[in-house]
Length: 146
Image 1 (tube, rainbow, N blue to C red):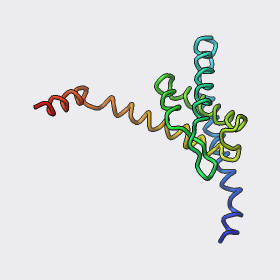
Image 2 (image 1 turned 90 degrees about the vertical axis):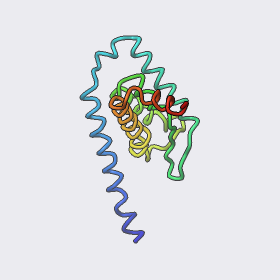
Image 3 (image 1 turned 135 degrees about the vertical axis):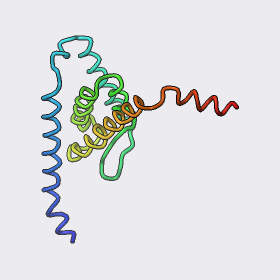
Image 4 (image 1 turned 60 degrees about the vertical axis):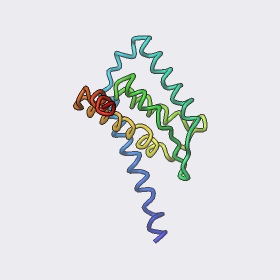
């Protein structure tokens, strides 16, 4: 059974890298690079990339070598658009192993769990927040005071 798992490992690793290549291609195809001509936006992106890398130095690391932090990408989605937050996060995932955060072998899984899942959850909460009652908290506070 162990031989079967070890022999199929290169297939799954290759599939992960292929999925990452498709995601990066989709992001690059949809990013408006003209926004990076604005020096203020470019400096904000570079500063955000540096902040995420510093934040990920204070990390939780699993036994498999996945290193992550729970807050970085969610803040980037709120400050920037989800598309730019994804690009910054993926760049941080590729730069991370160069400075000792994570390993190169786990980059596709790190991108999935550290970038894509927080982006998706943050977008879900943003969409959900738009459809909730605007006075939801106020009505609960008034009910508790009675």
